[in-house]
Image 1 (tube, rainbow, N blue to C red):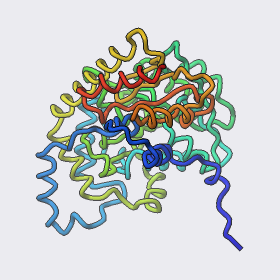
Image 2: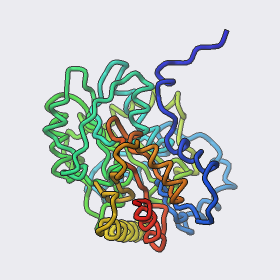
Image 3: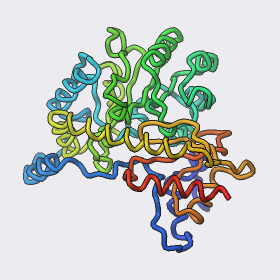
Image 4: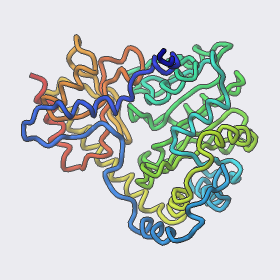
Length: 390
């Protein structure tokens, strides 16, 4: 007799990036180099000073040991100082739990807040890993619809209208993965007020917050003395310091929340690797200027992409964009996003994600990530979309 698998996991779609990268084995060879707009990773290496610093730690026996579940006190202290610069916040090391990427931080937050049968209001289009995780846990995603008119900015009134007695969380990603939309601080404050009014949590995933133009402060929630009663932040240093393979995430919440989340942390991962913690500490202590320079570079890439993409004659329409991403409506109404993405691989040597992996009813869209495409390659990428119009 064959063992039975959980129906919660068998109902979830294949990891989208894994799925589309499998198409590459079947791609016709036409001599063109693939343009990868699929995975949101920086195309540049970590700062060489950071790499040299880590190399000098490899002979230290402690580097190979566990740390406290939540992370080394000195690392969390350095992050507290960084939050003072970035948010004007006065946070304690007890407000941080270092995690295996932002995805694990999300799991920690959700299992601390929710049980099977609960609901989470998710702003669509969603970062695909979030609804995948919720479905595996038996938690219902209730989608706030995407509005092209609002360029993907959440509507607090719409979100509040979706709250029921089963709602435990309002979930927003800003800057958005997949649209790139940057939710204004006033809107974030309004969502926080709604969460307080209903006695639920606002989870804000700020993985890409260091790519907000001109270093603007993402929000002022940490200035509220009672922020921890209804606000949980998911964060990552992976994109910030080009450390995606180091899995440099964190959960930020009240000290009381962190104490509960550590029960799950201990059973999931025990702790973030020490080498990753040392990389984060070096980054927050020394690399503010380097991070600002990378933000400026990404802004230039986005601005060039947008300028070229919206010129007349392109049947693909830019629905929203910003930070690392563009959210594009394709012109082939009878085709799903998956079919169009496959056609782009085969006929244009472009790899991107279909919109439907980001929520129901989004088959008319594609997600493009241009964090890993150099500025010089952007005109060719846009031209390939135009050439597919015929």
